[in-house]
Length: 149
Image (cartoon, rainbow, N blue to C red; front, side):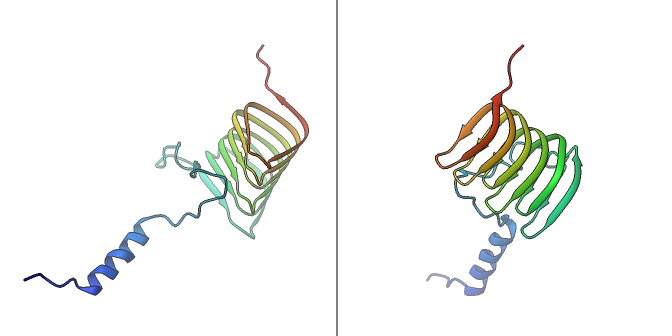
């Protein structure tokens, strides 16, 4: 004789599975989110600027910056910036890694890999070590790799 499965137990388990997993929406063109993957989460300094949020000022020593809204700032001493399709950043950024699926205007210096997704638009003075541009990605302005001296 088999034991019937309790519908409430199944529903509770499904709810617990949803709660224990982060509800992160995939971004078109990104194979997976890299924002928090490469940084020690216990010690990292992360900043999320959500949709319909406007932030202006100076941002320093931020390990990861995720821009879904609007940022007008200078960013330095930072590791990673991700600008989603809804995100807009205007200003200066000196960063190790960058993934742009939204819009960036200003001065961008990426000492690692600059990744421009299919929906990404970058305008301004851009310097990089390595560059990845998906079909549809746009770069306007003065662009050049860092030179080895």
